[in-house]
Length: 152
Figure 1: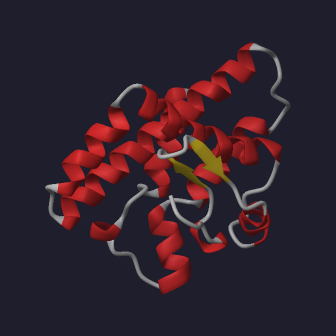
Figure 2: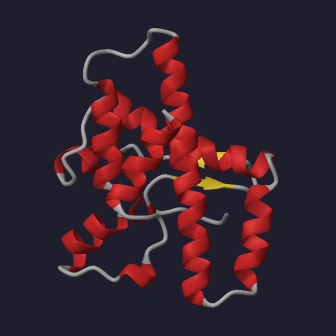
């Protein structure tokens, strides 16, 4: 995947099947986005591992192939679908943690807050002062919240 930079945030590299996380992203989540807590951090990791699951299931390569022949707007829509599915998979992980009686009071809300905090609409509003839906690649705050909760 070449060299990652901290401005990219966490990401999954299908070429080497590795999740990359710059730990300073967690500080940014807490200080700039208001998403704090160990389960919020776990959500981020589970989301990225969800992309690995997509690769193992053959979803990721099929979507990437479709994106190569799509307009930018359609490629973005396909990206949003993949990201929301990864959020759903993260929710499945969260449910598994609940079934194992690992969750503490407030953990679920931490993950939901994180999912909302990193929605494209909220991030664009904070960084650009406006929202451009056609440029979304990860989904809105509401979508990310909803798909995590659906998986949970």
